[in-house]
Length: 212
Ligand code: AMP
Image (cartoon, rainbow, N blue to C red):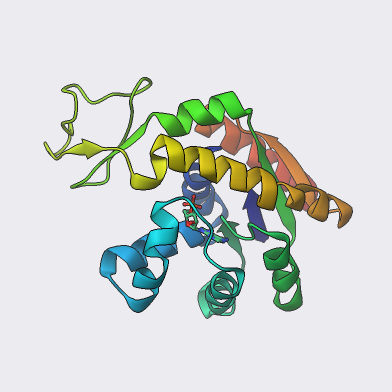
């Protein structure tokens, strides 16, 4: 099954992708993860996109599309995939249509206030990557990771200015994709407010119904 997870940053696409890929037995392809890994490893791609990603901007369409195309045409993606974070603009969606046929576009729906709350409070351990939330799930000792004692920090693109920019860019550039895919009969709406396990069950039922 070839799926796109579409929705604003903070709606839980990454969390749900991690759960759904196990259940569906297909890989999770996240452009954000690909860029962050390249930055961490200091590759030429990483150096090229570092400033854009940390400030919450968008990587140019051509570069992003070329990376996705290579991934989707690899044997690993032949039986299907979950595409998370791509496409993010209409030109990316138009380019994708030229080399791939998608089965379903799952639209994660969540209000802006809840998004700001989820994103604004997100913190990660610099050492082991454990994820915390300032209000919903703070570490026992402020700033110290419960698991490894590492420093718990806010990701640069989760700083308030970058969060606001990412949400604005979503509204301007990505939200038009909802109508784009609706017109093509591919859009499947999903309420992203409940706990991840519950959202997963709803998603699986929805896909079974569509495929059945
Ligand atoms: P994410 O983890 O999906 O929120 O992505 C993190 C960052 O990677 C974004 O804020 C962008 O800077 C960049 N990025 C990820 N996917 C795309 C895309 N499809 N087009 C342009 N930039 C992207």
